[in-house]
Image (cartoon, rainbow, N blue to C red; front, side, top):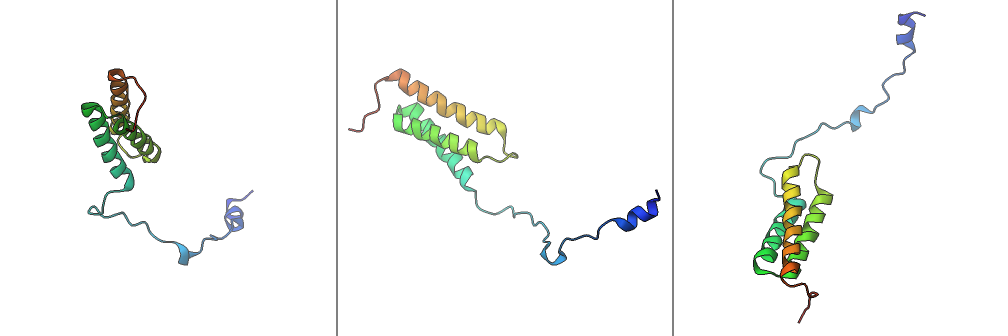
Length: 106
């Protein structure tokens, strides 16, 4: 078993060099992503639901926190994701502790 013969038996690189593109990092000044908008909307709705006792706002906050949790990247801050979810959940609990009747639209 000779190492020289093993190197000669290896296949040639089959990648197409014309189709290889280099990674370009996104620019710092680009606009916010959709998940960051959902995060801000969830924070606002959770705070409105908590402070003004609006059930629909608390539910929108919970929905936005779940959407943000589902779409968050692995590089996102876990504390921010958890705090948004806990704020939305606590606002919903506080609203229903204050007024346990079902939500009405009229």
